[in-house]
Length: 252
Image (cartoon, rainbow, N blue to C red; front, side, top):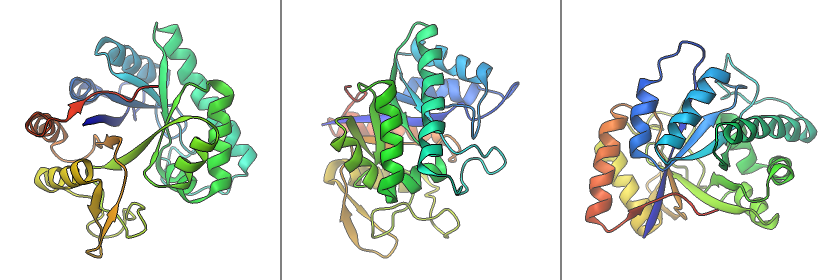
């Protein structure tokens, strides 16, 4: 059994301290690097891309809505054309920077509200996928497991990695529980590891109402802002060895 571990990174500016990001790179297989719209700037992006390449971690673009104040977690009333353009711009930037630093962009994973809305709305999903394919049809699309974005990506011929979360609770629909809902973020590493085990080994997850649903788990997201992220990642590696799970990036 194989599993990719991804993490959203580079979500800061200027003199933002990157030590935590850099330490976590040793324990993941894919890095989703903010492209400057919801967070990130050229210095932070270049620093993270260089570090990911040194650690043999796959570099991904992490585009979001242009909403620094809301950290890209607020909905925006944009047209599908505008969504296409903002994804095209951000992915192209990460693609160019990565090539300039001697690497190759591997994947694209949306951020925040754009991620959640493209998972629900096929017209937004299509705008996102068209932008990605117009840049490079070999890029892997990371998308919420079972979502519209998965289906549209496959229809356009992209390699799609269905994503699950170690530290987020699920609704019975398969969508992530809203952050304002109590219990939507799993705090303890024991809870996170138990959910990871169920997702990866059983391809199922227990939802907020106590029901169980099936989900494909190609790649596992670990959020850097979760408490004790580094300790959890070390436990995750131990768990993977015990269960004969190979931790490796998604093939493009």
